[in-house]
Length: 139
Image 1 (cartoon, rainbow, N blue to C red):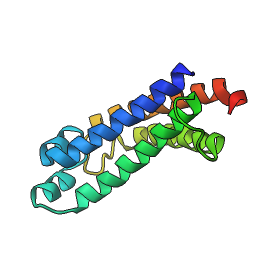
Image 2: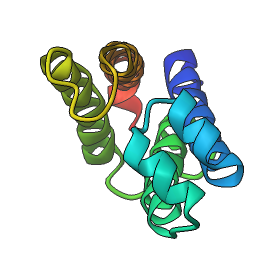
Image 3: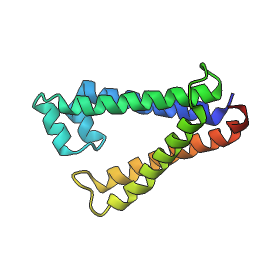
Image 4: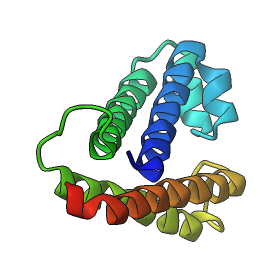
């Protein structure tokens, strides 16, 4: 078992649960987690759009969690494991780096959102990458 991949999978699962919380608790959670005022207002108005968008993110995070757990040996081996983990690591890290470019032009979100979410995404990406590197020969 690879502790980095277990932590990476757990972090993705925790992020998925947090996004589910946004769907369930609505506008206050969208605001607190920095989704933007437009998403919060749509949720307050009863629009399905925030829940649909957030559900897509939840699904993606659950799949990413499963791939990390699979590589760690906690669940069955999933297809294209190496390729998927490379892409997951790259997407997390690219999102983390890209967010820093939006600090001065936050596009409806706060600068703090971009800072925190970028640090979080970079951390998730690094955990996936280290775990993948350590587990590479066993995949």
